[in-house]
Length: 323
Ligand code: BDR
Ligand code: CA
Image (cartoon, rainbow, N blue to C red; front, side):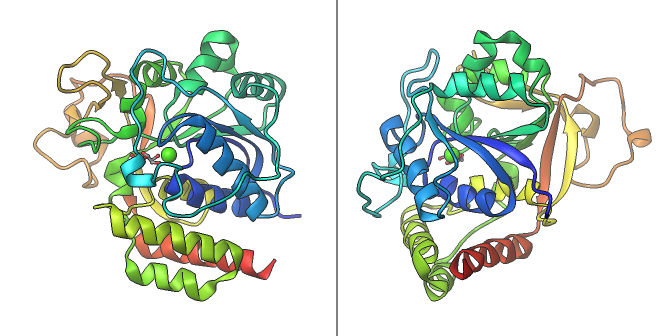
């Protein structure tokens, strides 16, 4: 049987989260989905997660609700990008698929305390993961790795310096980034290399079927309403599908800023070794000035193959049609 990486996904669906879930359910072994408040309120993000399991015929995947509110921040939503229900203009009823009774944070704790072979993907604010780390501090030795869509190697979207997922709950992000858990960060510097367009919507319509039609309507909303229809979360999870979409990453030190007047929520990357040059260029470590260097705690995705991503996405939607 084909080996699929085991993952738990913490997310706030959200249009691009839905696309990410479609990729993950096809290419990875999804052990559970935990919803968090972010793009919209928890009552919608958990509903949308349940809906995706129905749409894909995978109601065996358990769905949990975590926190709706950030740890200290006031609520920040992105309903202008995702629609008030998180899925643009798509109207869905209440899914039959039930929500698990256990709190999402307790599911995270149980899962990682009891299994060695499951990795974590985060596609929303890091509230649930941080709360889990506070409730069970041994968790930081138990989560083998995190693929995090959040932050940016350079500039932000929600503010000039901060990316949405980190800005919503900077204290939570700080706890996660300082936990010592190996993090692979896919920030805006990467996801902005993707851009979906009206022709992609048509392609999804042509593929059709329940998943293709849903995806077409979601993307249609996004292309019509967002300045940057990047499908950030889907671009991020492509790293673990083994499809060669992310072609370059670099280990750097990353801190989360929680206090700055203009920089709260920024992922501060230590590029000092590349001063006077471009970190995107191949620079051998020997040639760098090593004076200024904090421990490299995060692997940051840097380069993206847009055509490979589209191939992955469309092949995945076709795969659902054939099921
Ligand atoms: C991130 O913010 C959300 O709006 C998206 O779902 C994605 O996770 C991009 O900044
Ligand atoms: Ca998201």
